Length: 381
Image (tube, rainbow, N blue to C red; front, side, top):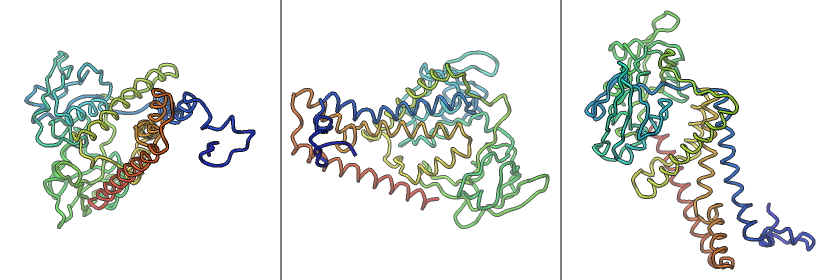
């Protein structure tokens, strides 16, 4: 607990060291140190991730339909940049396109064609109908990544999923669903949506160690997706080297990469907060501790580098949340100190008490909404 006369009695000999007797600049620095440490921790975790190496996919387009096809995107296009920002991996391209889809705005996409020619494509995402959700943005735009056009071999089995309940394991080759033969990974999702229902499980055939096996599997409905989707809970395998991307740097270069990635994540996170505040993004996207635990489990399954990336994002989110100008949070205290710097005297005790009440209501409301969203996701799944 901090040494403060407002919290408890302070011995006379320690009064000069009490927090409330420090200058406003010193108090500002002490409070700001918390979010600053979270930011530094984020950079360190990303630095460690880049030194270890993070496996991802090349930003290469597979199947194209809908808005993307009409705009001129083609199969085997390599996405070089979106609105001038270089895209090194499919994850970067996915986040950039998802952000633009939520905003319903046009983006300029620079691509390298499969034949070696360069091209610039204008994607007008204002044509998307209704409220775009980040998780389903690529599907609504009409893009399937090239790495999904792989053999239908299970790469990841999500915990507590339909696939895990049915006994599927990494390395299993999916053969058919309800008698419909599977030739590539991208056929799995559409076929599941077409065949799945709450009343009748799917009949799934797969091959393990050269032996065919048949199981019944009941997909789980993700009611939060737009539109709702049936999920098996399996992930694509790592593709061939042609479509793999490994982000790995030496210790010095990794520091620059970590700083750049922190800035990119900060910009994206602040954008999400702003969109929620102005109603451009549904508050249904707000996640609580249950969802965070699930994300942690999935990222840990994907490897150390992805888990470090998750921890870095969590640390950055805590830094940004704590800097929000809400009383009871660090940002609220910093706001009080800024007011004190301007007016030359501390904020009145009455104002602080009123602010704490407002802050308490806001925080309890946000936590309640986050828990509510988590529970809805659990019930839906």
